[in-house]
Image (cartoon, rainbow, N blue to C red; front, side, top):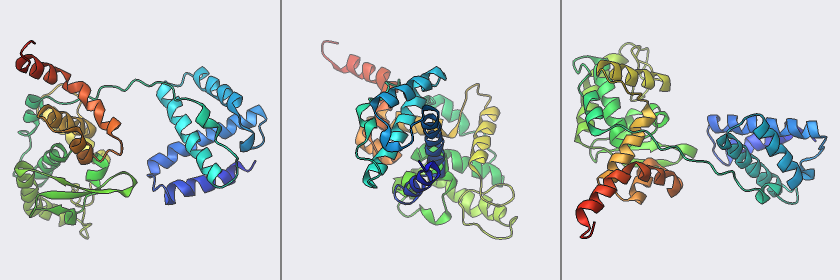
Length: 299
């Protein structure tokens, strides 16, 4: 079995046809390497010789290594995709991983900020300084759109359309979507772009075109976004853990609490499946309970 060759062609398939991110490809490769090592240890010479019994042994070994159900579930998904690819390329006759059910994984309830908590963050930045203007624009835009931090970090100036109040976002799999933003985000962005960003870009040799810049005038990294938020929390004297993704959770939760429909929130978040969006209904149960109590005649 030429595992190096199979790994190479599968990686090419992920990158070219599936348009998978480098992060996703990395995890697929690691899962595949684990599987190939297992085949070698078990003396299974070819991928077409893997059957249901071999898969059960593989799963047992994963649990013996104290892997979480979530990690095992991800590896199964990887190998199911891998064998689907092999089946298409006629390197195997069938996909044995279709016989194996995914382990039940409990979905953690996403953390979010209450309105009074996020309100404090909006008042900590120095709007007279370029970095303060930038930080305010980041906070307003993340909360206004619910985009991922990676999507925000990749934004260019040309992606912002003030005439209709939307931003063009390139999400997972390079899929594009337009997300509207409101007056607060627009005011913060306009102040930053016309004042703070113009001053920051003068510190660099050339304008990268990126929307958000660091103190040197070059593109702000995803790590930089996290540092910006941590600084805001510290300045607001909040004892909460805030990361960019929590603002995404907050965006979705506040929309659903205010009565937005699930399909619209799914589209705004760029979720492929509605099930990914439905997790946010868990954090709106108290709100729904209150509506029921106040609205139902026999509540």
